[in-house]
Image (cartoon, rainbow, N blue to C red; front, side, top):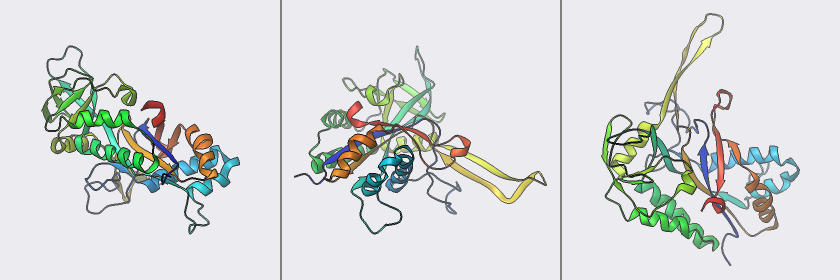
Length: 287
């Protein structure tokens, strides 16, 4: 019998700019940076993801709150273990500005990822498959085909040979044939898989840094200490995560009748200034 009876991989597509903060920082150049994984890439911690989804589900499916609390935990009873688990969301791809060299139909932007990130996604899929006896062979095989090109900067969905990314990074590219992930990207813009060293720098330059101020309403001047900076991932950024649930009646109801009906969620902060709207695309619909 598998350890998890239910497994739901899913992709998180940013509809607006997204800020899921890691708290204030005195060491970083940004006062309110985006959450980072152990390699320094943007990520969404499972606790942030779980909290946002639980809040939305309790509003949308208030009549099933007993099931939701059983699966995702109840704030008033933190000592009781929940039946469901969310994984940290891995960055899958991020938009990058591009200047194409010798292209008849130039793009304004492309998706960018790295071999490191795709290996992390594959490790999720491999472990989920073992723990739940589920099969995600289509995406696993696709990622394996991409990883076979390690050592090269490659492009999927384009014959692009040379490009300048985010104004500063000149890359030579090779086309990867017979690899298709259009069902995940769902755009006409290609995906570039870059070597880890340059790819990480390109991704870091794709992030949006905004300076904000707090105004004294009476004096019409900036409040002392009222200047700070925030970091966002741009709209159209894609993350990958999964929900895992143990065998139980509540998880069966939650998985089939509640969770997969959820399509849009507000993640992170800055909702009042139009940030944080994301779309959830469930793995079984796109893999």
